[in-house]
Amino acid sequence: MIRLHITAEGQTEQSFAGKVLAPHLAGFGVFVDARCVLTSRDKRKAREYRGGLLSYEKAEKDIRAWLKEDDHVECRFTTMFDLYALPDDFPGYAEAMRNSDPYERVAILEQKMAESVGDSRFIPYIQLHEFEALLLADPKQLDWEYLEHDVPIGNLVTMVASQNPELINDGPATAPSKRILSEIPEYDKVTAGVAVAEKIGLLMLRQKCRHFNDWLTRLERLAQKG
Image (tube, rainbow, N blue to C red; front, side, top):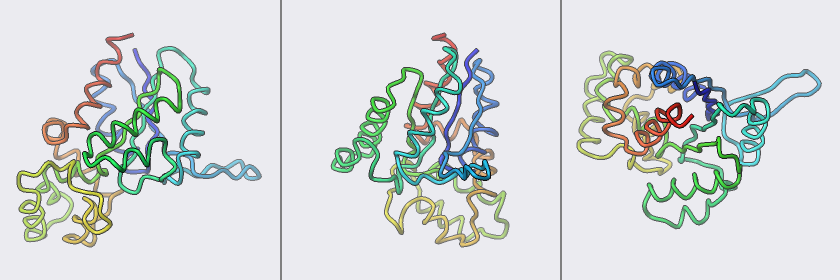
């Protein structure tokens, strides 16, 4: 049995881990819990504030803290951070951004994160380009949350067509979330994002999103490795 701790960028990623990844990975002997990345702490009130990726420095401290909190050999740790708007203090950021291939870009960042944390139990993951790329794997499923939006959803279906949703870019007006918002201004990531991803299903997400599939495949095999 493997305990897998996921440091999530925000509430949506945390909820996705709990509702979609956890039930699936339990079947592989991998038991998931997730929490949002720590952003600040009020020591006077003994209160923590989580959610939102402000800097690599803060994220790394939080990851290291969890590694110390649960130092058992059967534990593994991973992340679910977006490449879009990634803070530029991430290790390897400048090198990665010079690379025109998005897959090589995240590979550089993940490798540098692994080296920075320096713990064999840590498996960094950065979502290409952001969570909403998963929703664009099958944008028709947005109609589960947004009834009477046939035209805007149809526009998204046409826009995606046969494109790889992971390669829909990270422009401030053309990133996956911005494209959804341009058609459905009331789109709410926290309330609708996970429900739509659930409707799409892991099979489709894996077929359309290669980097996501590679990560999930690695997580499925954790218990096999002991």
